[in-house]
Length: 184
Image (cartoon, rainbow, N blue to C red; front, side):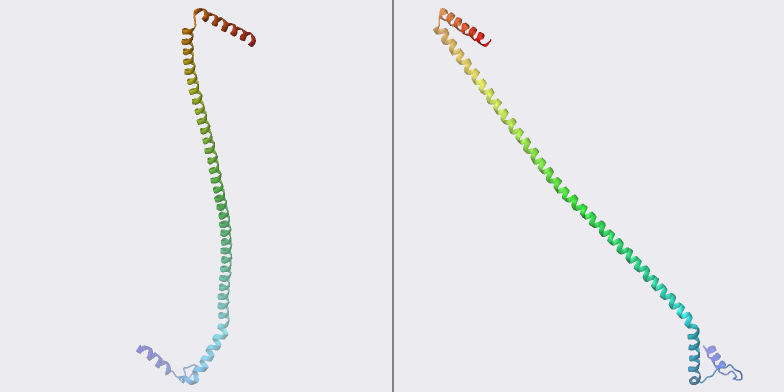
């Protein structure tokens, strides 16, 4: 640090014999030196500063333009995504409605099929009951006929003699013969 102060002291003791030197009077030299330095800086630095500011301005404008283009692209992508979402929601609603109507249709088909099956089963049941009734009636008729026939044969055997029996048989054969001629 001592060397630095010594160098300033040395510079302040230069002889003022020439055209160049340091004036240590701060009040007299500082405003003039500062105005000269500022004038030179403004004169020569104005173009450089304008160029720097113009470059900065162009970069900012380019950044704004790029941001606007990106924003427009993002808005377009958002609109496309929203349109696709609406389309998918519409299709989902259609699938949902079609699914519900398909379920209702299948439900009605199942109900109708079950109803038809129940009717068929009811018909089969009724036919089976009717068949069993007819079979039972036929069995009862057969048994009644057999009992009546046995009773008639018993009565005939006890009441008829051989001669009356032969006359009855001949009369019945005659009736069957006339019936046969009528039917032919």
